[in-house]
Image 1 (tube, rainbow, N blue to C red):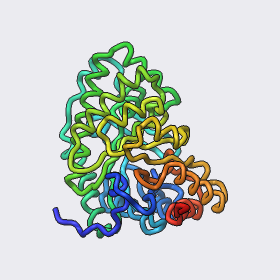
Image 2 (cartoon, rainbow, N blue to C red):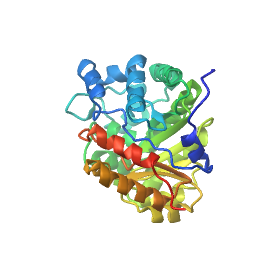
Image 3 (cartoon, rainbow, N blue to C red):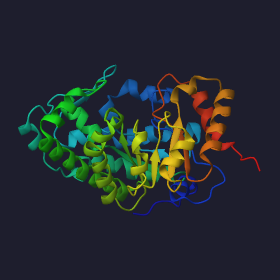
Image 4 (spheres, rainbow, N blue to C red):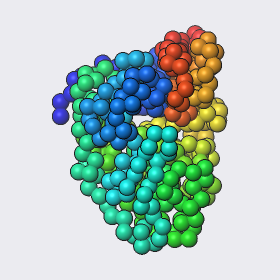
Length: 346
């Protein structure tokens, strides 16, 4: 598939560990409710209408590129489209979290989960990816993404978002073979999904393990990390970023996974992150999203400090989680501008 030549490859250079003059910058959930133009489409179309209509997904993906001038675009979609591909009924209503209406409750439910043809079931995602690449016209790279097996499993077994996903944990402890069956299928389906996104035009992919931090180090090494590694081993054609929120204790091991980069939340100091990962892998993050509520002047100061502590190379400036809805657009702009204005003291 032929696409326009890439004009801004700063993000891809950072993932490869090449020398750069400044870090690239993008924000998780940068296509989101903090943007007035996003809210206009949100008022007209349901969430899954926006995900399943390539033209809408394209428009939403491009909004922060036009508005903020970030160095990478990330596909507008949702991690739970994978649950839909596995024949789970998912709803996301305004003002409510996601709900799975036919959750896994028994061993039989778990063993009934079969490997889907994700390229077919999620064809609209691949159509959106190709459309976005064309519309970007080489301006910046496009990032595809998926949820981690553990994070998706949490929703499948719990039926909804909770603070501790106790039902999901209880299922794993009670029926370890059944849980491993589902997690294994999720890993293989996710790898196939990311490969399909890459074939459609994604130039990097990120795996979000949003609920990894709910696990102890021992449980993470059974229920999450092996499946993250399995995904990395199967994905080809583009760099993989692993973002496991709250799992600072696993950074050393995750740095050996084969991923191009590791995302960090705001609870891990840059110096310790570099030490734990050996300094030989690109790190991404880790600005606290709530600090975008500070003044633009304070944001600039904190961003410059963050970059100085991580170093310019092998680093992607980002938030430690997704941008929250109430952030003023000018503060998001201040974050991006602060990264772009950074210059190391000679």
